[in-house]
Amino acid sequence: MDCKEAEKLIQPYVQGNMPEKEMEPFISHIRKCHTCHEELETYFIVNRAMAYFEDDAPDSYNLTGLLERDLEKKEEEARHRRYKDTFFRVLMLILVLFLVLLALHYFEVIELPWLKGLL
Image 1 (cartoon, rainbow, N blue to C red):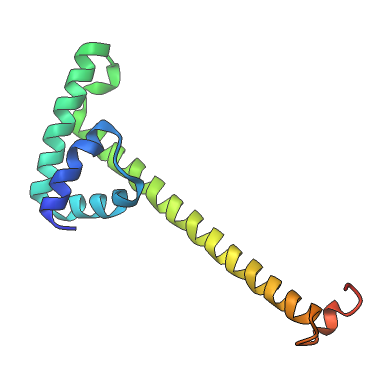
Image 2 (cartoon, rainbow, N blue to C red):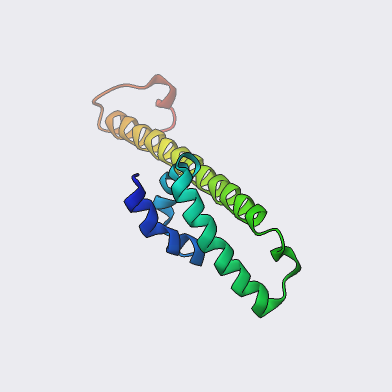
């Protein structure tokens, strides 16, 4: 991801409506690019300051700390989602392979001794 793409995603990130598939590349770029990190920090602080004045939320005092916690949380969520997606893809692949073997055995294309008594 380049700076131009990251800049377009700053507003959706701050507003909490960034597409999930963009989250991990965006955070990775923000961690590496000081300029984009500063711009995100500015938008984030302005957004949180406005929320602070509206809600008088006590956790709004350390705004830069809030940004780091938010980035870490969303980074962890993206990583968890990627692991979960990978797990289900592998599970589906195993299931499909098993069903193919089962079908081949059923139509007597191959013989699977461990299935002999079951079908």
